[in-house]
Length: 613
Ligand code: OXD
Ligand code: MN
Image 1 (cartoon, rainbow, N blue to C red):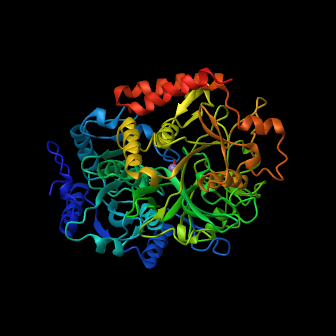
Image 2: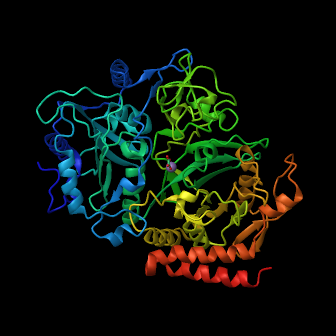
Image 3: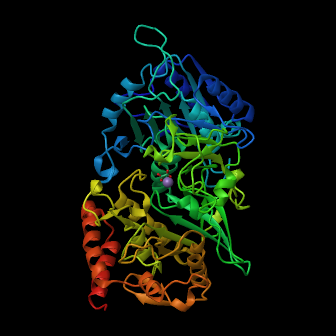
């Protein structure tokens, strides 16, 4: 079977049931030409076999089992260290469907290119077939996928990050649909003359392409072995493709962490929170409260799928089964639960190696141990003038190892969401916390998530970089349509809709200091959010939302100067008028696709700011 017909894109209906799966795998094998095809069962024995073979080949370093049992270090090619947004493409039927913030490619042209790139791409290698479930196998909100890959590192990682193997495969029957994902590192081990080429510890290709076909729900990724470029269940499926499925089917696929919150009185609430990348989502998902009696338990740290349940409420699952967390900055002081999670059975990528065979990275301990080998495999000392771990170094570990994992984290029907939180990294304007006046106001807050530009290379310093719903690099279709979709979901939820809040841990004073301590003290903000949900706290009406009265915030023991507290809760009218101009610039990019209620909300905001002192 031809897997890449150029003229006619395959219909989504092809990716149903077992026979179509076998047909598709056969087609990919015929195109890519691997030596053998292995269907992975997801067992511990299989992972152990693969890891041993990778250690023997020099592709993984086994860490000292006394410190870190069954754990490994991978060092990537220095040119393959992160997600590549400029090589990530949305190949929808029209450019308008992808929207102005995505890289669009004509699907026929992309199929042509992929046909050429993937032809023979796996020669000399093994092609692994990974059936997986996103969400509990058979769950009401779950979906199935199948990735083929020629990277054993990807097999091991997908085994930690998803429910991968026989159980998921058994679900693929009859008319059950599954999302196909093809991955190759793009380095065949047989050259044009038929000669064998020695493998590399981290094979990859200088050319990288991560392509999504929203209409047919297909993912094709070539040339990179790293993270979101290669673990296709994560950003590619669970966000880009799933967001399109969600739009078509009336649910939401969002870049959100999920937590279960228990108050000192024993009341339980579930919170979904969207933050742009690099805002400390994993830390928030595993927050260790600084206030007595509170408990935060983890359901997910990166992605949430949300769907209205039979009871009319919005219910959410974490579609993933593991954490692919940024290592630098994670330590006993900032995230003890993450440190405990990775006690063993963990794959580390691009961290530093200690002479005793354990790992280290910046922020793990205040001072680095002696005798480190850096992420590139070279001797390192604090005088080296470069970081020991790559700033995007990662740990990959199963969620089950998290000591603060919530008991309902894998509930097949998901958990009922009480509050949705939008956050960003804002030095100015955005207060510590504000509640949306209603669902539309909440969608406006989500649509206008932003951070100030901090490096001249990104553009004028201080100008806002918008990241609507923290989905800018992860949306499979036009962002303005995504806002519309949120408004429709809110209409259906009606009075059962969760409340929406905006938070900001990163506000700075004029002297450049952070005004809020963050980390475990963020529980104080969650405390107020719960008080609002439980009708136990009033709020001050402001043009940008409902703000806390100072006396309703638990600030005990913080010794925050009065002026700092005031500033954390201040609405600076002039600053917000300028922000309105920037929001107008954001909306202008989407033309008349911006939902009318959001345009009206912006007008209203301007009007209210006009008379605000
Ligand atoms: C991530 C990201 O790695 O958002 O989760 O970039
Ligand atoms: Mn993320």
